[in-house]
Image (cartoon, rainbow, N blue to C red; front, side, top):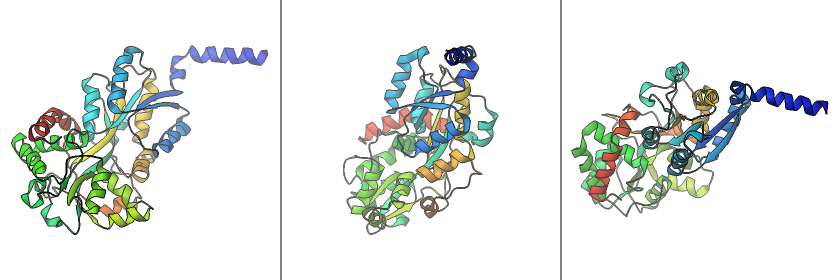
Length: 338
């Protein structure tokens, strides 16, 4: 009985000190669907003693859930991929500003906003069939509209955030007229109607169904690191071009997140966001999931990323991408890029 009484007393003591209680739990809503993230979360718990309760789902479903839960939402942090989706959470008023000198010092200004942060990056590159397309003909995103590529271009849907963010960057740099010219030219050059994901585009390029496509680099790196003989063989047929190296640089896609306004465990939420900017977590993004760290000083050991070589990255602020998402969708709809 004494031990039971002691347990009850200890429980009451913890519950009477909310600051202590909130240090032990983090409720994470995540739209990152990578098995390799398991170790990332386990490392955080090991370092801090804070248990992560995780709910995974599609971005729109999670955002709708947070909205419906309102002030009673148990969610502390929302993680997802692409600036478009992070901006949507911001527009819905779900994120809370985070004051953290650590995050400000480690994450470059163009990769963060006042209430959400990028923790890893991927570049949107041009992949091509070595036997069908010359790399000198596809040095820029604008070249994807070149009549030389008629019947050779493949893509995922124009409504996908990866393509919307790319088009938003074109609008930001070159204006709506140039952006629409590019979108219209890509549609004219379609080898097939848009379908599938980036891995499907790479495989179609390797098979010769398409001559050229666009892909996020971590899909390329994943195939390059594959131990499957058939995937190793298909990557022998595929070349990669870093676009726009003589101008703005390759478009950068991000993965990131922020603390929610209604977070019941705010201290734990900030600790988790700061952890994601730590050397250990940043290395994990790179070596575990083939993404680049946002912290410049972090060294990586990923042979697939290394094999892609050095490149110039577009440093357009992520908040600017969000500004032009709606216009990008309008342009894609207008030219028939479904």
